[in-house]
Length: 506
View 1 (cartoon, one colour):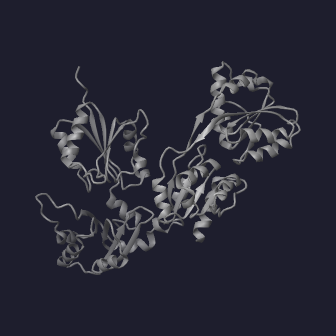
View 2 (tube, helix red, strand yellow; view 1 turned 60 degrees about the vertical axis):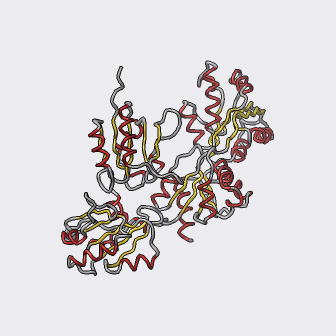
View 3 (tube, one colour; view 1 turned 90 degrees about the vertical axis):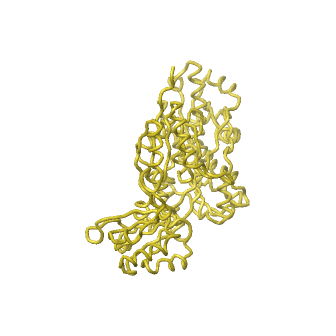
């Protein structure tokens, strides 16, 4: 039986921001057998590596290894498709603008391989938009021209900048830094005045974006004076004058600020998303996991679960472990009808509600002591049989404290925390280089993971904003300066406001 023919999708990855990938591109990545990408493809675009995910091929340079040639990439794509694979080839920007997408498509056509082109936002358009410079305007420009100074036309001829200048309108040149003298000379030869506005854009769309505005005749000196390096996109035309009115990206309140985000395993990433909307660059740290402990004691307690008047869960992991054993024993929610249920944290309460369990008491902070204080004040706790399901770090101490309130406590440690498996090289480099303005920690466990990844010597260099007092205690004990007070009640809005006030003040 012959192998079914595969297909190659040339997907425009956009200018680098993951959220600017098209929905079609996202769906194809999720269904791909193989993904081929280079350094310009943001890591967040790539499907996870876990079992069942697509194979990954990196098509860029790595260390001393050179990037594969265009011919080698084309050969790889053809071979994979002939093996029946659904292949996504991520290209910078749009496949047919500023790239080799058309060459790849021609090679696939010649090899009789099916392909599809998925457009993306071209980096030239994105650069001008991020800089607040429109490409066209009813009054200033009716056309726009894109050029790449590093891409000669077919046959090796250099770009005729004077011909481009005569067309008029807005001209966007990628990789303009080396060709700037030729561009200026070409526009002069076309009798375009040197006073025409020009903008040089570096690190487009990043927190380090810089935009230098001047005239075409003087922009080279402006670039040198500002030490603007790297890849530069040059925008030439009268629409550059509109930047003063239309700039938006680099005037956001947290633009240029760099934040380390240590997220609770049980919370949403809403705070990180909100900080990015305000202009901050956010590095999200890898999260730790959990390992199950011996569950013999929990199985025994489930056998007599009806005897308990209170059941307290410390985390969603505690709920998940308990529920797995409850269901496997042939029982369900009805077995909890005689007990009142308490939870530490809204995420824990949410998991219980998903199982159809009504939660009688929720402590919104990550502090077991706060829940102990509330339970100690209740008249139905003294003398009550209470089961506490938790991790190994606090099961024993929590049980002792509750017994002082008069309850008969059975405290079971059913899991232990596992430190993040990934190394913190990128984090440590950023901290060591002084490129971090603030650490945001959303739970004690998240704070502990941050300290593990960074090392205390580097961690103490950067102040921290925290979600609650328990998180503050973890960092303060290691010498990390905590510069925000936990909000009461804790919320996403309160956390974002605290971070904003801290960073804008600096």
